[in-house]
Amino acid sequence: MLELRIDGAATGHPLLGAIDVQVQAGDRICLLGPSGIGKTTLLNAIAGLDPHVGPMVRPRAELRVGYLFQEHRLLPWRTVRQNLALVGASARDIDRLLSEVGLGDVGDRLPDQLSLGMARRAALARSLAIRPDLLLLDEPFASLDPDRAAELRALIVRLLNAQPHMAMICVTHDARDADQLANHLWYMSGRPATLRWDRPLTSGANASQISEALRGLNV
Image (cartoon, rainbow, N blue to C red):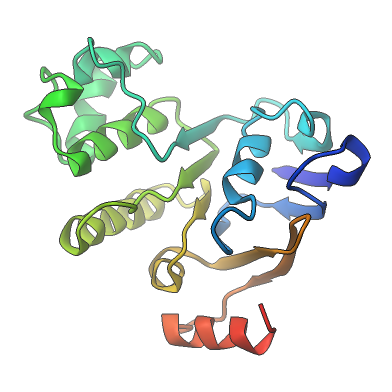
């Protein structure tokens, strides 16, 4: 689906080093690492938003990428329904998407009339409107209280289970997210940053086991 052969040193990239990795259909990847190490930068490179390394990211032809940014980035002067229409969703698809993310009754509200959790779910619906092959999530649970974060985490799991061929890369700081969302784990560290860990998660691995494995690798 996607092949990354990034050589940040060759382009003078300030954060990324050598990264050679592939993403396959159905991969559910959680990307962990210290704050400021370059996790969002790597997502931006995958999304084609970083011109320094864009040529080093080789997607499958016609790869559709949905991106849920840390900020919802909904146009504040457009309703939720209008925001989804701007990315090409039909009226029928908008109704379906809003229902899937639990926002069926707020489509005519403006983003400022939504809670943070609701706005993030609306942005998730927008990222799904293009029927992505690869879904990028940049700290989707940040700033949410534990109950709202749990609701959004469960929602993402349901959406992924409904589309088993869709791949996901989720930036997070919490091994518990990997416990519930991931079948594969990446860990970034170093200056410049590289992937120190790139491996599937064994069936039944939990958050404490993931954390212990990372400590065992001195990351």
